[in-house]
Amino acid sequence: MSDAIGYKVGQTWWLSMRDHARGSREVVVEKVGRKWATLTGGYRVALGTLHVDGGEYSSLGMLWRSRAEYEAHAESNRLIWRLRDRIGYGPTKATADNIYYAAKILGIEL
Image (cartoon, rainbow, N blue to C red; front, side):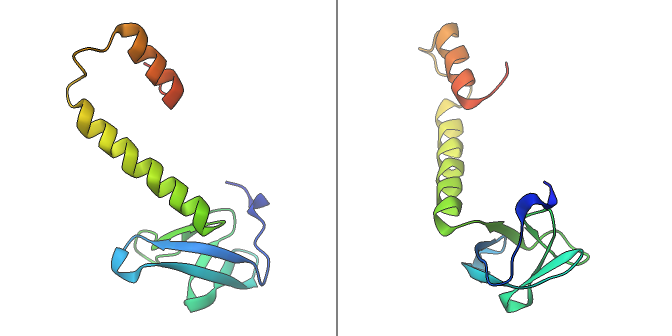
């Protein structure tokens, strides 16, 4: 991603934490520096990314432009995992044409 994300003081974002016990919540940009934007709760995000700084560890979570954007992404993830579970080793009634069509819709190159 580029710096075009454009963090601005006072702007609200939706924060989804990798540790689900910490939950998701709205955060506000409190400060924008040269390398980092500081968010409410003391979190910071590197300019040009949507990953919340985890220090020496992996990112603590992701920022989303809105709760709706996050929920749409989460629903897509949930459904794709459900689809993968249902397909298993392959649908027995699918034709090659149908499989290529499904791959095209999903943006998958076979």
